[in-house]
Length: 571
Image (tube, rainbow, N blue to C red; front, top):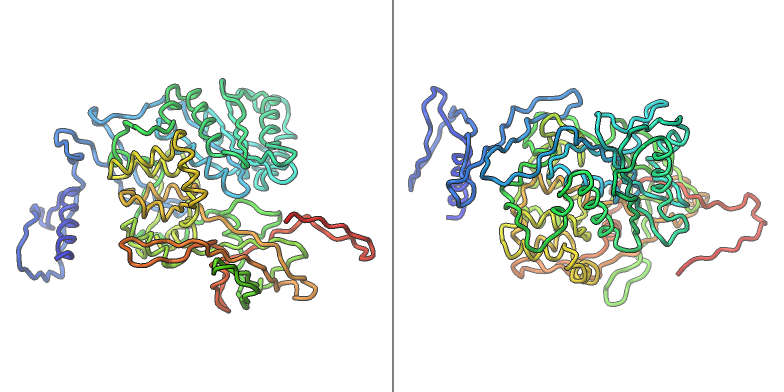
């Protein structure tokens, strides 16, 4: 039966990867019986990882399996595992650079897009042999010092967002202040590159990135030769602009790597099996670590508008839902307008403040995604750093379960970027699906991609449903993409007056979207899809706790209520 076949495959995979011996040193072999019953309460074996194993269908080609050390606890509570090595000359190797090619990618991200770009750049650089760490710019300052190469890196790369009226992202404000006050020649000899995220609809387009580039140059820094300041525009093709800038950067610092990074419909890269050990992390199941490896070291109260998403999640409050009232229904059952009342549990707000909500994905979508990934949803694991090279923040708090990650950290019904699609495509076990996805993610497939992603609103979940062989992606490679697929908070302007409702009781007026149907595999049934946050809030029950935070508004009324006010709002 199916259960027995699955068990046989599982046991065979163990013998494929390990050599077993009994407690007294005798070898253990695999034997199959038609009818058997086993009851061995004290059965123990020793397992040693095999030196090599056949790769694919070509039995003459071998590669070394990763040399995995026993996980050891580090001072921070993380787990360290030895880095995998590949030495078979028959397996095409990526370009190996000198140890001096050691980069640090700094990001200042307001909504998480810049953080995703930083991780995408670091991942690509590592594939071409460079050591590369990713850091938040708020960590660049310590006391009165600005240290842009804390690990002795040869190059500092900046992904800088512009927020508000030409200001840097909140997490970078202190860094900018110290950089402006730095003495002459403070950055003498620093090789750097800058990519900015902005919106040309605003007056001060990419002001933070341009200011950063100018100041680094004034202090003696040298921009990487042949690399201009990248000016990403959120109102246009932001992803495409970043990909072009990244290709130019890689060509300048790792000659030949930029061309290899450009998406192609006929890639000659090796299949997924030769790529699954690359990266900074490894999944360790059932870890002995009991404390969460949080993204922020200490809980703290937010004192500014907002910082990076991981810190917002860490410092968010547990607001209690007091009630949900449907105010109006949309035409044809496409949605509704709901009023959601929250108790902020002592947190106060003012008129026109913004309430940030961390939504949770639909349970049915999470269950389906777990099945598509063919991974256990409720088994505990942690993300362990591979080797002692460049370190970076854990993508999400660990130990955790896949259910928790899919529920709270990945936007499973959000639109994936073309960059994420291209990375996932390399793990497709079906060649036709792999080539089709690479074609979609390529510059030539831009119009087709826009049709799927924008007009048909192809989500990450629907991508896995439409291309079943994506389930071949190793879990660690999928989880490393979390910063580029992150479920971001949604923002709602408080629609209540604290003087009337009470300073910690707030109402949100939410447009609930349920405007499309997801057809489940096998024609079983379909489920409504819409806004992840609006659907989450509209279905919340009284007493349910949601993660929320208050973002103060710059809007304020005149102290004198007799002063006339003219207010203009866009429809």
